[in-house]
Length: 486
Image 1 (cartoon, rainbow, N blue to C red):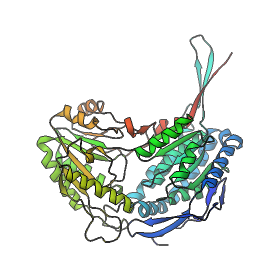
Image 2: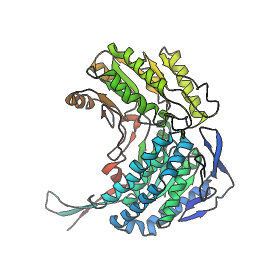
Image 3: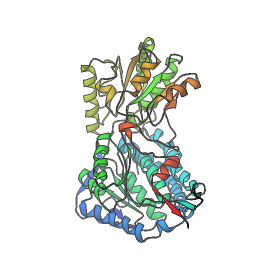
Image 4: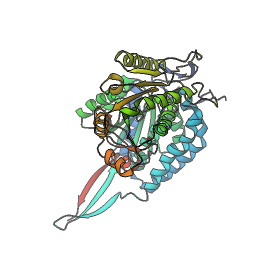
């Protein structure tokens, strides 16, 4: 096996009801290496009959199987086994992520163990600490119990940009809660979901608890629409999330939606520009080529320091080594697909047309004829109401926006339909907290981007509904029931 090889045990099958089953049609999806544009895997494409079979298996496992009737501690034992297998397959998951999505291999490797297997261990530990049953007393003195029960069958819709991590932060809490799952992987990046299914089989997870299929948008909508599915958890674009919310709303199905972002980094006047640039530039360009929903893509800086920030970020962008994700010297890989690169190119052209100053980048690297590569790009003098400041680009493009004072910086930070992430750069912790409390965002970091998803994560406004990670990520997969005793 070479680094560019993806080997799956059952790529032409689906994992349904604890078995690898043949698809109902011969249709398939090709999976591409985004650095070479070559096909590296071919997987089965689910039709309506396959999705129905997966939903039926999950429904039967929830209604009649042992999983929701186990104790949380018993379910936690399976989560620990899952974490062990993830750690054993660390290299395989990192390679798949690099091939399918373009993240640099040496960046992906530590994240598998730290965040992905870590999520399963974190939720396994919650079995001993979370109050699944709490005694309560009413104002009239009645004894009552608040009981947390699994929400039921969950449809997990996984995007292409970081499938293993996003599956982990959905699957681990859902399993601890006692739910059963249908995981719908992305056609562009399905291979991590296949590895998840292989782990489910290896650890002896009861049949039907986890079911895995790969489907296009039309068949995916059947998962959202199906009355046998109690909850949908989705990570992806705001447009797709709006569609899911509309369909789920027709039947009042539960949803967790983690959607788009256009997150601000607010640089206050006491903070060193070079220090801020050295945090923002490498962490943005070097982590999945900017294909991350919570990236800090708007750099709001005091007007007097605008030019210095543009210069500092441009210098960093020029030092980024764009290339093969497996090459030791590479610090930024390709975009995930030709379509994604074309989207980034359109945004760059729009930014120039609307008057922003292209400081560096903005095109395909001349020395890379194959692969979906794009240069790290910095715009200066960006109007906060312009397209590149308001729309999610999902690529290596930073916008530097001048602000007249702290109040205007806060206004611009909030002047967006999104509210997923933010950061405040200042040497004064009290000032950082004061500004953070005024920013309408699900997360605000201090002097850097958020990297820890073991505590609650989610968005304000059009960045989503609900939270993932931490205790909030567990309660998202449960219903609260009150039992009042006579």
